[in-house]
Image (cartoon, rainbow, N blue to C red; front, side, top):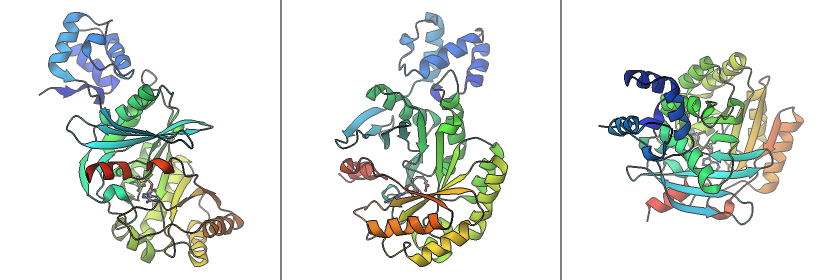
Length: 342
Ligand code: SAH
């Protein structure tokens, strides 16, 4: 069986070249080609024909196919549905902000976490992605759109910390100066709150931004919409977040999807303020995106604004996330979902 070349780190390629009796700088040449998006060995013109043949015998190069591409007329957001080599599909969204183009990428096909408001989890987990398949989302989005990517958010389909090793390898690959060279400070990773993995990530001491999907300030509400809370309740999650901040010095960003009547009252606001007291953080309020399969509804605009003001008045930085690409289902696994159900 041939192996997946693009999932290899530069160091692994150096070891491989050594084994093939080639000088070490060949590894760098190979790495540069792959992370420029070359899809065949023939295209690697500075490698000898015999080396290319040897590589082709042992390795394959991944390249996803565009199944659907939708572009928002309102804000230029582009949503891709990619088909992977085994026929499974994942989504990537390209958002155009003043601070640079940002891609939101998937880490799994489907998701095992079961959050009540999320379209990605409806069919459960199909499989975890490979590092190359995560790199490809950034690479081929850039190549197809002709736009340079400066930021990555791991907020697409899947739970990144459920695919831990792969995500760490992905970070190393896109961070490499000979690859896409995207700085850790330009990367955000979002988790539903897998406590032991947050603790492990803290030890890696990376400069990325950790986003925690909080969505509720008390166990009762949170367990109702996020099954993960029954395994890792707030009295374990919050200390893990505090430790994460102490270890990395990076302020945590808490995501809070506003669901009408569920988590958006003044009482909830008071509880949230108590929960976050003394923790340097940022709260990102997201008006819920309505998912057809779910009865949950977004909070009213004035409720969201009042909630934001309540947090701000108590000294907690809170922003309301701008909705981009709302005309193209550019949120939360909805495009894959529609594709699968056809
Ligand atoms: N599994 C990770 C990352 C993927 S989801 C996590 O849970 O954080 C990215 C963000 O979108 C999460 O905060 C998630 O809770 C949120 N989200 C999912 N479905 C949503 C919906 N219908 N409306 C608003 N936010 C949603």
